[in-house]
Structures are given as structure tokens and as C-alpha cells.
Image (cartoon, rainbow, N blue to C red; front, side, top):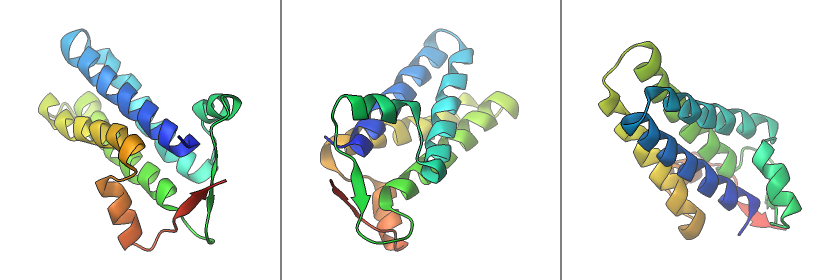
Length: 137
């Protein structure tokens, strides 16, 4: 498993877990969901995430871009992070119906399964937009 796959797996699982906790225990758990979205978004631009440090210490392989430009993984982080931030923000701050978080749950499930399959809709969109593929190093 690569660092990016592990990051998608962890992000997806935390999103799904925090959504469940927010729905059944306390809506304040949605802030954790929002934090994951914000962290995904910022990591696309900075290349830094606390989990990446842990994954490197565990010996997971990094991925290198095959060419210059935005990579598919960066685009997935931007797309997933943006959708999570927008949906959670709308529920928490604009008092939109919590049913909107179904979209966030779909993103979480998609991130989780993509760690194993290597494919998700955001990856397809990123490829169609011309984002560069990466190879494990």
C-alpha cells in the first residue's frame, strides 16, 4: 500500500466514523469531518499531512509524479476536501438539512474503497482534466 492509498483509507474511515458519531451521538463530531476535509484540501497544495509522517515511518512507499503538473492524487484531495468542507459547512453554519451529509458519506466511502481498488470517481475526473498519474517509488 502506498502513502496516498493509506491516506485515502484513513480519511475515508474517519469521515464515515465521524459522520456516524455526529448523527447518533452529538453533532459536534461533524467538526472532525470538516477537519478531515480541510486537511485533505490543504495537503493537496502543501504536500504535508500529519498522517503522512506516520505512514513514512511505517515504511509505506511514496508516489512520484510521472510528469510535472497537478497529480491525480492532488486533484482527489482537492475534490474530496472541497466537497466535504462545503457539505459540512452548510450543515453546521447555514443550518442546511443534515441529509446533505449523505454526499459526504459517499465521498468517505469512495475514498475508503479507492485505497484498495485504486479507482474512484474523483480519480476519473482528475484524469479527464489532464492530471498526471503517479508511480510508486
